[in-house]
Image 1 (spheres, helix red, strand yellow):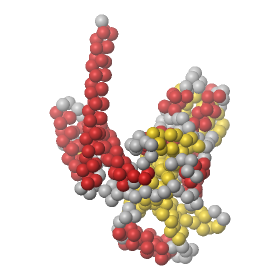
Image 2: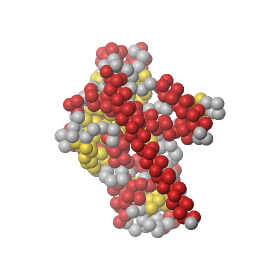
Image 3: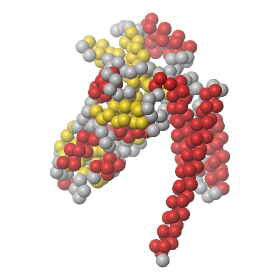
Image 4: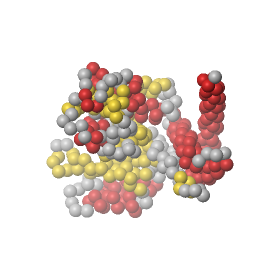
Length: 392
């Protein structure tokens, strides 16, 4: 009798979940119509003031239904982000019709279960065309496949909130003949996974990619004399853990489950809020609409004299361009010489950006644009209600 009651309640929940999915699909279809209006009327894709008003109303209505503010805010922040990013992708596709393909061949590091694969699915789920996955064993292989036309796009991790910049990728971009056409941020949730039945005290060897090892360095120190084995990707680490007795790998819980491994310890990263930023590269640059948030990445070299870098950076301030990242890397074969990677919140189509680049050429040894692309780093609007500040 008790089971019959539980089954009935679960059936009701399943029906409600199905109804929610139908409504979400309807909302997305309407959102697609909205972007068509915004394109024809040259309106910004994102309207943060509208988002704020909408969230305030939803939170107030949710409270009247017995739902807490934090829950309502989180649910609708996710829905709004999905809507904005889908609209941005549609606008970009309308602006770059030559880039529309029946299939998107995407090269990324590793294979099944790698964080790059998860990022690949996240980014291309918002874009037309069938996804064809091309797992690679190195970053250089990824750019080579794009350069030679074997892949339409390449996905490269560029930085992580725990371990910082991925220098190998920055160095590769100095000479790779590709253009950055997109970016995304992927949540990274590292776990220690092993074969079923293996206990933590039985593990003698841990497999992992150098980046996860760096991001989990504090946990690794607690393992004492444990042997660390470096692999070219997280998916490779999983395969090694599958065939090596009393071993483990650092990967996501889902990747471990897919491979038949179990979580020995979860949340092993140095920081609980761990994210990796990826860039998407292609052979040709794309136009980016002024209606969406845009980033431009460039590389520049300055003269080896006092104040040369300061003179270059002052140009961005004078032209009211926000610089969001500055990274220096050595020039191979030229000891003590460096190049600088610069990320700007800017669109190459803007007049102040054009002026800045012309002025930059006069005070630097050289400047090379690596890409102008839509920014997908959405910052959630903050809502203040009667109870507290609500943040995503």
